[in-house]
Image (cartoon, rainbow, N blue to C red; front, side, top):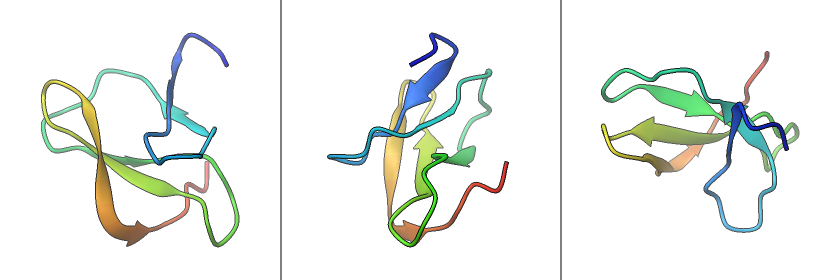
Length: 60
């Protein structure tokens, strides 16, 4: 994994998401495709946290 990517926090997921500077309460999605991918993460000014019950897909 490249040093400029953050790992997905979903247990068992090895996908990554963009690691550029985040704004407070910003939400990003991992780059894992398919119906079980795209896990949402929210920045709490300290760390990325999983957003529960949200399964959207990163189209980048």
